[in-house]
Structure formats: C-alpha cells, structure tokens
Length: 343
Image (cartoon, rainbow, N blue to C red; front, side, top):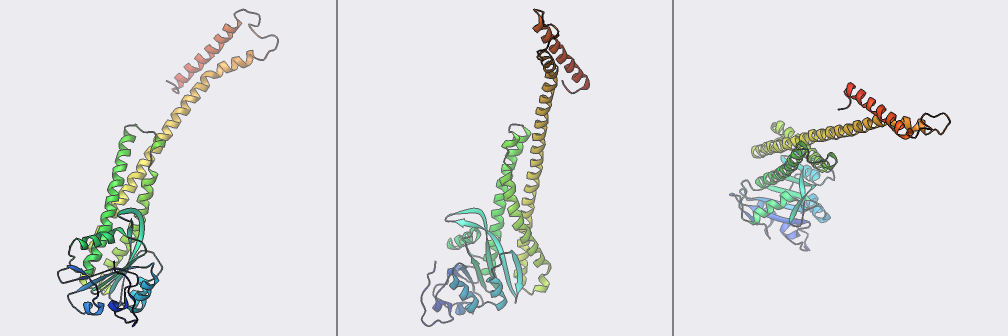
C-alpha cells in the first residue's frame, strides 16, 4: 500500500503531490503485465499509448475525494458521477467514459462475507479509477491475481471485467450453497423426517431475495447499456465487455431466481404439511370429544344430587350408569363410522 507523502509544491502531478486516499496504483503494459506505479508521474505513464493505469481509492479519506475532484485526469462529468453520494447501482457513458456503481461482497481481513457494499468506477481510455468505502472481495481477488503475476489483457478494461466476473462467480458460489441447503431440506420434507416447525427456509429466502435485488438492478442497467451501446459512443472493446458481463449477470440472476422459486414452493409444501398435521390433530381431538360426550352427559345427569335419580337405591347403580355412558359412546362411534368421519 502506498503511503501519503507531503508535497510543499502542491503540484498537479500525482507522483509529486502524494497519494491521498490511494490504496494502490498499477501500470499495465501492452501485454497486460502489471507493475506498481511507484514514483512515476501519472501524466508521463498515460502519455504512453500502450500503457494503462488502475488507481484504487478509499472514499473514506476526504483528501482522496479532493484529488479526484480537482486533479484527476478524468472528464468533468465522470468525476461528478464518481463522487456522488447516491449508492444506487448504475452504468452510464459520460464523455466517452464508462461510469458506474457496482455491487460487491464486503471483505473482512482475509475472508469474504455475504454483506454487500458498493464499488464506484470510471474507465476513461487507458485510466481506470475505482473507489470504495469498505474492503471488497472481488477487488481484493483481482489484486491478489496481480500480485501473483497474472496479466490482464486490455489493462484497466481487463481488470474491470475481472472484477465483474469475480462478483458473478461469488454469487454463483452462494447460489450453489443455497441450492445444496434446499436439496437437503427437500429430501427431509419428502421423507417426512423433519417437522414443519424445524424447517429453516427463512435465511435462505432472505439471502436469495437480497442477491436478487442487486442482480436485478445490475441486469437492468447492463442490458440497457448494451441496447444503447451505439448511442453511448464508447469504444467497441468496452461495449463488448459490457455485453459479456451482462450475459454473465443474466445467468447468475436466473440461478438466484430459480432458488427463490424452489424455496417458495418448498415453503408452500411445508405449510401444507403443517396444515394437514394440524387438521389431523384437530380431527382426532374432535373425535375424542364426540366419543366422551355421552359419558359427560350421563355424569352430569347423575351428578345433579336431586331426589328421584334412577339407580339411586340400587347396589349396582354405578355400573348401570357406567353402562349407559359406554353404550352412548359406542352409539356415537358407530354413527361417526357410518358418516365416514372416523375409522
């Protein structure tokens, strides 16, 4: 990581003005091989027709925002869009530059998470400027590839496409994980080895819904850009890259939609099984209530403690009353069997 350096001359040259808010800077040659920018002036590097540069900034550092707004060699419209506070996903062409806000998974130390954050970017000719407020998984993966010596055809264009592809691959990995969880639940539900209240589909549906919202917006913006590529006046290579990414996003988007649909159907099946089990229990309870109703009636009658009760003076009065209750329950049972309400 490059550290800020004081500059008493306050020159517009990046190499002399220090690197406020800069996280890293890479220079790509014609073959896509990357080397750190180091102390080379940015203007000198960009003057090489075969070179391209990737600058990655931390937007939490206000000095970095100031440098982008005042001294970066980006079109004015692109700088404005890059530094906007609006975090809605977008993809537009501005003064021949590709400008957008992309989604990415947040990264904590050495591992990724399923929390989403934003990557803002501008691709203007040979210069790629990306900005973020939190460490991002796809961006860190691309940086790791650069550190391992991987080359990126097209320089900044290849880097940007790789970031998009890494995000899509991460979404695909999450989709496969969710699909595996749904398959296990499906097997248990079909085999009836799990109670309805023990099925945990909520986290799966929330994750799928969260991803589908992001992918839906990205698919919309990338598809709209592809449809209007002829009007946006961007280089053919950029338009082709956007089209490839649009197809990739559409693929993973359909996977997430399929998971949502499977989870919804499974939830309905679980709810139906729970309702059927509840109905079965209520039916059994109703049957038991009906069977004991005659006995309850007999008990109430003989428990009135009034004169003139039958069997009051008989030594077998209890058993005669018990027989009345039993015969009443048997009659109710036979009647319910005749109606088909009881087996």
